[in-house]
Image 1 (cartoon, rainbow, N blue to C red):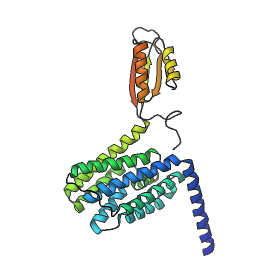
Image 2 (cartoon, rainbow, N blue to C red):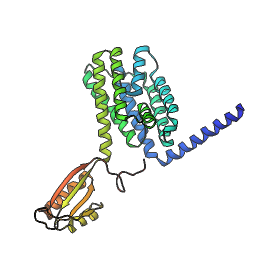
Image 3 (cartoon, helix red, strand yellow):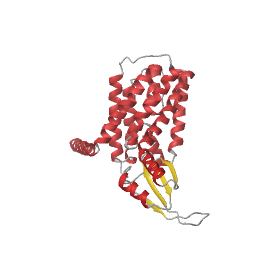
Length: 303
């Protein structure tokens, strides 16, 4: 019986590893982004958080507090905690999410171990360090999240709680992180706890900025009497699709077709210059589009 179970476990592990290799080959961009993002994030923790006794958020924040208070190994605590959470939420996560989470956690744990004894430079400018810490960690996390991967931690708990009990992810994460930072004040003092809060805020802001920088585009609407030159320029010169909306002036009642397209920042400047030179009487509206999904932009399936 024991041999049968052992064989099944070996076959299951072999099947998981084989699938992981196939997915990695198909998603090599994701693999590179996860490696780089995890390296940047870990550098932010080991160089700008631990040496200055700042608390942090999420599972890493709990592991850091245990290190400060009891001297526990940070890589060991991060690895064990995330492994336990993965086991808990195994059925709630997609196989792809599980694979990339395992990859991210393994990388972060290994990199923390490698950087554990590295003598990073010190400075008395703690507020500056807190901001830099948050920016670096937020950028690394943003790269990983952009590729549809996860670094484990509260991401797993939040997803599990949402699917199992309908808990709001944002609110749940906020309360948990505030509890961790509050507990940090008892361990590292009020000043360092407040600086840790600054780092968490900077990290969240940088993560959002990193995500939006990849997907942000310009929504351009041109209200014109003669749409044909605009159509030709956008399709032929800029290589983008165009939608023409039949519309008319509210006061004059005259036909005023609206040409709508989604462009990069540079392309929107080129189109604006073209209209200014060729059809200066056209009315142009340019707005930020935070996310565009479809052919030529962000794919529906994770990369």
